[in-house]
Image (cartoon, rainbow, N blue to C red; front, side, top):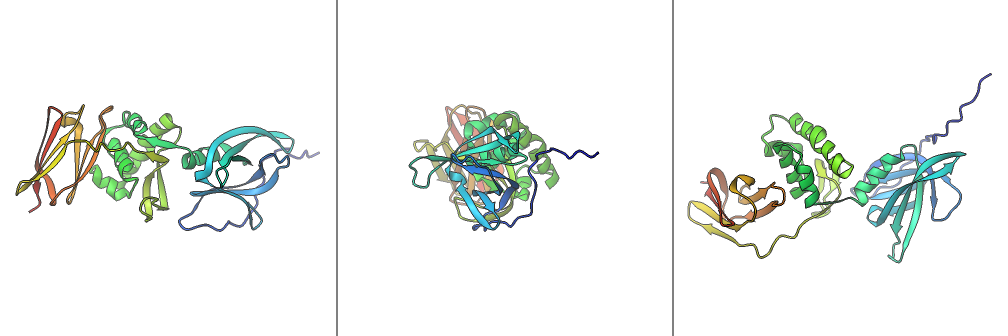
Length: 304
């Protein structure tokens, strides 16, 4: 006598894909169940998570969608589904007019994976203190990669390889996958760097392809407008004098690209990111740097 299985995993059914907006792409999709607000009945549907929205799709119709920017809370709850207790995801979101909050529940086979990805895209906030905590546990090359992406938001792998003088691209990948992201998972419960085939830069509107991005919403410290800063054109060289606190010359890194200079410090408690535009293209060859009485002095030769 054959006894049928009572396994209650949600069956997978082939389905169409909801229409996508410009620069939108699918991150997760799964057959599952959903209900909205205080509805008592679960409905079978297909869930889609994109880089912009959470979408419930039934047949060829969008039954529910919410922009990730409107998500305000996220929780995993227990529910009864097909006579079994299972975990479901509860999303609390702000109404379109901002007058209150609604909730939607979604049930899928790998709900923890959905929770983490929605959290990364909607609720995770990355500030300089978080970057410092992660950087404190990294080697020098990994720190440079992390801080560069904190400053620039995204970069192609060849740029990261140039940044740390890597012998090849695999060296950079190993730093990201085996050092930076595992340590960030210990600090913020998820990888901090993500590879994207195509993604729009929200600040410039540019579509960036095949690049590494820092996840989450970056909350940056406001630059001090009262920082003492002087730049002098001394003929064959450029002299920069800038106020700094809590750092020595050995704590500082200089990045040069044509007429752009970025002064950086990875020192915990005295982090510094100061991008400067100089009156001429410069080189780091034979440069001089010193710190005395909280004043940083840099001397850079012009490109001849």
